[in-house]
Length: 291
Image 1 (cartoon, helix red, strand yellow):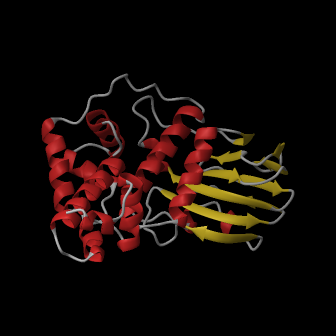
Image 2 (cartoon, helix red, strand yellow; image 1 turned 90 degrees about the vertical axis):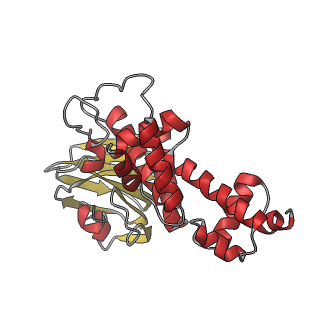
């Protein structure tokens, strides 16, 4: 799929009163587009977009008025409050004061992929509500923009699917049926195919689409069944494999640490050092000296 970008949004971010600080543009993310910015007071009307909009207010309170073909709803939104607008709907909005926000635009294809049955998912129009888990997912996506590493693609895909699934289950007009308890895990054949792909391409950026393709499942089915099989997300499992291979190379080989980092799928030596310290409580240099 192509990268989700500014042209997939309602147009708020392209206005002169918005001062972007960082975005996911150019990262190749095809499920979500993320932007953090300072917004000045404004009133404007926007056409519908192909993506679903989630806005997290980072400060406040601030008065927001919204509607379609007229401002029909007003709310005083505090820091941590959310603004949700579904894809395809026009939007009239007025922001009453300066505000720092994070916008997350979720592709409709990603949202619909989370529905196991019961027809298409339709999101609600909401303003001013709070949702601690959705807030953490938005902040995690913004964190991925701040510290983007190409090797983190599977992590971003997982965050995007979690965000879409949460929206579908907790912010839809008609909630989809709950998935059955105890989902089946990957079969031995499917898991073997994934392991072979991981071993062969451990040094490359791998997306959930790449891994799901090896099993013949949709991305959402793959993510659920992989976790049922292994007890962790594909991103966590991939990161663990990279750490294990790097640790083995450092203990047994003589290749420069920077080369070990590249060979094991890390962006650079500092990235490897950060991950090794977080997972093993040591450093690549210390691992090399321990052989």
